[in-house]
Each structure stands twice: as C-alpha cells, then as structure tokens.
Length: 619
Ligand SMILES: Nc1ncnc2c1ncn2[C@@H]1O[C@H](COP(=O)(O)OP(=O)(O)OP(=O)(O)O)[C@@H](O)[C@H]1O
Ligand SMILES: [Mg+2]
Image (cartoon, rainbow, N blue to C red; front, top):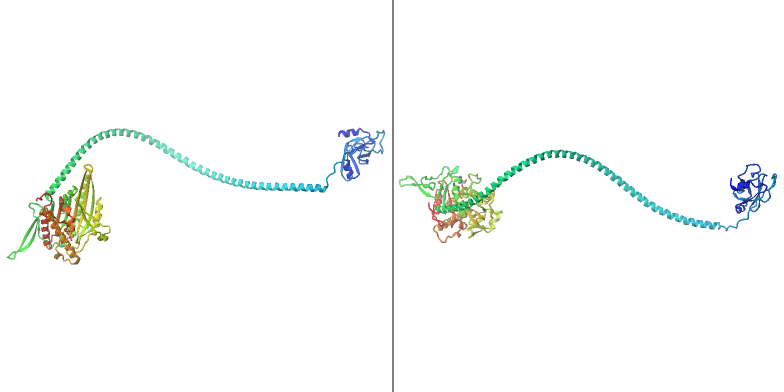
C-alpha cells in the first residue's frame, strides 16, 4: 500500500473529496464518471465498491457517497467512454467526521483549482502535413540509405565473389600443393633410395680410394725412381744429341760428298746414256722372230747383234750380224725392276738438284708405253718407270727429312700431238683445245713449265695414281695397222722437285721429264692415210729435230736450235747443260720389224756417241 492510501485509511469516511489529476481530459471526454476503483475495494463493508455512488459535483471534484466505513481512497476513476483517469494522491476534508454510521451520507470530492491552460495543440492537418513532410524526408533519407546500402551490398557481393574466387584459387593451389607434396614425398622416397645406393657406392669407393691411395703412394715412389732415371737419361740424351748433331753434320758432309761423287760418276758414265730393251714376243708372234744375239763376253750386257739373211754368189743363205753397243742392253727376259735399277741413278740426280730426262724411243709396238707407264692394269712387278721414279723420289725425300730437308713435288702432264701441246690433266679436256699452252723456261732454276697447263701437287702415291689414270684416259689414241693400242703423240710427264734446308740455308730445284715418244715407224710401212698420215709426218719431223738437236749438242755447237719443234723446245733444259739424259730404245723381237729395229738402233747409236756437258763420256 502507498503512503497516500495509508493516510486515507485513517481519515473519517463521511465525506471525502478526491482531486482528479487530469480534469481537462475528463471534461473533454464529456463522459460520466462511472466508477471509482480503489485498492481497498472489498476489504470491509462500507468500502468503496461497485455499489458506491459518486458524482461530479464541481469541476474536478468527485463526491462519493459511500458506506459508513468508506476509508479507502480510489486510485483511478473509470469513465463511461471506457477510459480511466488516475486520482491525485491528495484529498480535502470538507466536513468533520461524524460518529456513528455514515448511512447514505454523500461524500463530496473537492477538486483543486485547475492548472493554467495549456497552449493549443496544432491543427491535425498541419500536424499531418508536417508528419507527411517529415515522413517524406525520412523516406528520402531511407531511399538514400537504401541506395547506399544497395551500393555497399553490390560492393560486398563483388568482394564476396572475389573472396570466393580467391578461395577457389586457394583451394586449387592447396590441392596442387597437396599433389606436389605427394609427388615430392614420392621423389623424396626415390632420392632416399638413391642416397642409400650412393652411400653404399661411396663406401665401396672409399675402400677403392684407400686402395688407390696406397697404389698412388707406391707409384709415387716408382715415379721418383723413374724421374731419377729419366734425369740420368736426359743427361745421356743431351750428350747423345750433341753427338747426333755432330753425326748429322758429318752426314750432311757425306751426303754432299755422295752427291758430288754420284754426279761425277754420272758425268763419267756420260750425261746422255742409251739403253736398249727388247720386248718379249707376244703369244701370237712366236712364228716370226728376228735372230737376235746378246753376247756374254765383256763388256757384259752392253751389246746386241741382229742378223740379216744374205745370199752369197753361190746362192747360199748366210746370217750376217750387225753389232750394236750401248750403256746397257736388256734382253726379252729383263724385268721392269731390272730396267729401273739403271734408271734410278737419274732419279737420284734429280733429287740432288739436277735436271733429268728419260725418254722411250722406238717403233710402234716396241714396248715404249709398257716400259714408261706399265701395262694398262699394272701390278707392283709390272709397273713402269714413271710410278717407280716417283716412288723412289718419295723414299729419297723421306730419308732426307732426317737431314732437315723439306720437299715439294709438283707435276704437269702434257702431250704433243701434231706439234701442238695438250694438257692431259685438264679438268675439262674437250675445252682444252681452245687454250693456248706455252713452254716457259726459268733461267734461274733451269726448269721448264707449260703455261696454262694444270699443275698437280704430287703429295702422295694416291695423287700420282689419279694423275696417271687421268692422263692415260686423255691421251690421244688412234688405231694404226701396226699396233692396236698405238699412241700417236709424245707424252711428257714433267716433275718439278723443290727442296729446302733451313739449317743449311740451301735450296735445290730439280726436274725430271719422263717421255713416251710416239712410234717412229716409216710412213710406207704404217700405211697411214688422211689424219693418220698427218700424225705420222708430225711424229717423224719432231723425232728428226730431236736427232738434230742431240747432234748439235754432240758437236758442242754454240748454237743449237731447240725451237725447231715443240718437243725439242720443251726439252731444252733437260737435254743441255748438266742434265742427265737417258734414252731407252725399245725394239721389237719380230723379223717383220727388223728394218725398223735397225733404224732405231742406228738412231740410238748416234745419240750414244754424243757428248753432253763438261765431262766427256767414257765407255
Ligand atoms: N717388256 C714387256 N713385257 C711384256 N709385254 C710387253 C713388253 N713390252 C711391250 N709389251 C707388250 O707389247 C705390246 C706393245 O707395247 P706398247 O704399247 O708399249 O708399245 P709402244 O711402243 O708404246 O707402241 P706405240 O708407239 O704404238 O704406242 C703391248 O701389248 C705390251 O703389253
Ligand atoms: Mg705407246
């Protein structure tokens, strides 16, 4: 119970005035006060209850006509319009309390004076308008706020999407990394296995290393011993090398002596030497052989006799022998090697720095090409003077290397056909007929070269073989009645050898001409006609000039006309001066060829008696 109510319960019950706290509201409501509701209602008889009557007597004053025991103060009054008004917690006592019962006593509530009037509230329309405006403004703000939040929302959505994407990427990355981790783990396992193996191998290697170290140690000792030995040997070598140098210088002196003696010997033998070779009869020729004799008495192997049948005045047949003597005579049994043994002296002279000339002379089919080049399919036994000469030069060059000689060998291979020069080594032989070839003599070195002809470096036996093959193919070959493989041109293989010795500050230049002359048969016999007749005429004329030149040299004539034919002009340096000339006269063993054979032997005898150079030839 509140403090007010406690006070009220002690007040006399005859007349009680209560003041309404909101008389204006009651007035405006214009509704009769229906009842008063008090907390003491029903506490005891005579308390204000639903049967108590009351009325609004004065403004703000409620009179309650209650039962005699009305002691409670209502707390609120209910109006007929359903509203309730609370009472002020004060009261005014208008009449003194009476003793006895308050039967049908009217209580009156004295209201306090009304408060000053409140300012008039604004009109509802205005309020509504203001409220509407406020609401609109509020709504605007809300829209703005909505837009703002929509923007924020969109941003946030984007952010969320970004985050999702990033999240997906992270997830993917994590998956990849997981995968990678699995792979790495597998690889790690493999590596661990490998490490294991390597460690095992390392263990093995360590053991091996240990063994090796011990071996190295023993080798070191060995090496030390050997180094000492080497030191001793080096000392020996040094003293030996001094000795060798002495020997080399001696050797060079001996070599010079040998060279001078060899040259003297060649001079003594004669600078023009003539060999005669009889070829063996071919299987088809055994019925028609000439009578040839090779007398065995002194001088051995230097004479040949050929018989001619003479009929005396009694009609008797008689063999009459004609004797010839040369520097060497090779019968039909002589091999290529036998011939080369004698030829090799000229080759030696060429390496010594002289000019040499070896030519094969003889009628068609007498064996000139066989002697010079060898057969078309040569073997080491049958190969001719050209490959043998080059082979010997290679060997001599090799030997001289020890004496610090360096050599360069080059070659040209030409033929003189109908008095004009053709290059047998031309890369394009068909166009070589348009090229003008010219013989050029070098007076300083005393060698000869053909201008515009191809020069080949003869640096190996293989190159030489190629050169010989090419030359053989290019060589003009025309069939004649005398020999199916007849060569109708003079072929000249010109070798130039340049040797230098830096130690001795010396240079040697030598040249060697290896010549396979065209057949020397007489025109009447070869039965040549047309082109072949022309060929034969040129051949005979050039051979006749050769004979004249050699005769001129023999007579020591101051003017020898080498220019008369391309052949003699070409051989100028290798026929005159200190040149070593070797003529191989090839003869046929046939009776049918006897007159040609005699003619060749006469020519050779003529050459044999010729003096060349400073020394007079002695037999
Ligand atoms: N010493 C020999 N041993 C064996 N066969 C030989 C000998 N000399 C020549 N012949 C053979 O005789 C034939 C004629 O020889 P080759 O061709 O060398 O004569 P040629 O003098 O060069 O003739 P041409 O002047 O016509 O060229 C060839 O079949 C050759 O093989
Ligand atoms: Mg020939």
